[in-house]
Length: 448
Image 1 (spheres, rainbow, N blue to C red):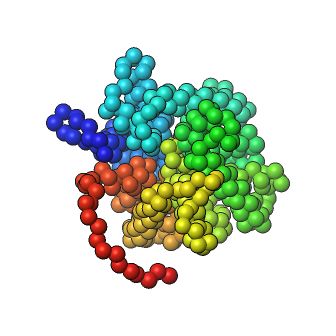
Image 2 (image 1 turned 60 degrees about the horizontal axis):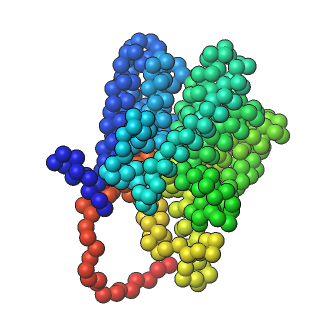
Image 3 (image 1 turned 90 degrees about the vertical axis):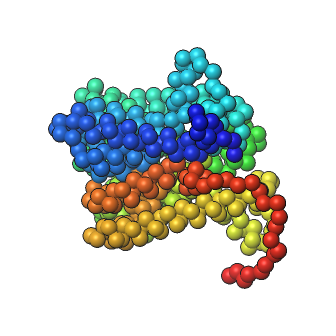
C-alpha cells in the first residue's frame, strides 16, 4: 500500500481516513457543545455533543437528545454539515473545494480518494468524484423540493422548505436524523405516500454506491453493466422485496403497528421499514411496538446494510451475496463462485468472510458490554442497539436516550468502526508486511 508523506510523517490512506474522521468528530463535538448550538442557550454535556457529532459524521442517526427540540438553527446546521461531509467523505468535499478554486488534484489526494470511495484504481477518480457531487446535489435538491411541498401543508412555508432540505440531505446520506421532535421520527406520516416514497427513494439511491450510479449513467444497458453493479442491484431489490413481505405478514395483525392502517398504509409502512434498515434510520412505525420476529429480521437487514462506496454501512450487500454464493457453490460441489457467468476471485470470498466475521465480533462484543453497562435493558434491545450502531442505521428500540455515560462511549466507538469500516481501522492500526516468501506445509482439520 502506498505511503503518503505528510511532512516527516509517512501515512497510508487508511490511517489518513481514520484520523480525518476522528478530527471531524472532535471539531463537531466542540461546535455542538457551545451555548449557541442549543435552543435553551445552555450548553449540553460534552459527551452528548460528542455522541451527536459521531452519529452525524458516521451518518447513523442514533441520538441521546432530540434534534428538533434541543438544538438551535446553528446546531442543526452543524449537524447537517457533519452529515453531508460524513456521508460523502471529507476527501470528496475537499476535492469539491479544490476544483472550485481551480487547484490541481495531486497523486496523494487521488490515493486517499481511491481508499475513501473503495475503488480499485485512481484512473478517473477525479471525474467520478465530480459526478458524485453533481448527483448528490440533484438528488437532494429534488428530494428537498418534494418533501418541502408536502410539509408546507402542515407548517409555514419557510419552515417547510427548511424541513425539506434537512430531511432530504439526512436521508440521502442514510443518516436518519429528523426535526419532528420528541423522538417521533416520521411516524406522523405513516400512511403518506409522498413522504414514504420520496424518503425510500433517497435512502436507496444513497445506499446503492456511487460507482453503481455512475456506471448506470455511463452504460445504460443491463448487458453492459459490470458484475458488481448487477449484483448490487439484484441483491438490493431482493432484500427490499423480501423485507417488505416479511414485515407485512408478521405485523399484519399487530394492533400496535399495521392492524389499524388502511391497505395502502400497510404496504407503505412495510416498505418503509424494509428500506430504512439499509443503514438509514427514520421510521414510520414505533420500533419498540414491532413483534420480536420482525425486530430480529430488521437486525439482519441492518447487519447487511447498504452497498460498497455508498453513504451507508453494514457488511454490504456484495459481501452478503458473495458469502451466499460461496455456500451455494459448496453445497453443489462447485469449485468456483459464479455470478452472471463470471467467477468471483477466491481473495474476494476470503475478504467477504473477514468483513462478516469482524462485523459479527464487533456486534457480539458490544452487546456483551452493553449487558454490563445498561442494566435495565433486555437482550434484544441491546443487540438491536449494537447492530444499529455498527450498521450506522440509527433505528432504536428506545435505549439510546437512556444510555449510561459508558454506554454512550461504547456506541460512539461502534458507530465510528461501522462508518470507517473494521478492515480500514485494522489496516490503519497494523503494519502491513510484504508477502511471505515461503509456505508452511499443509495440514488437515475436520470441518462440520
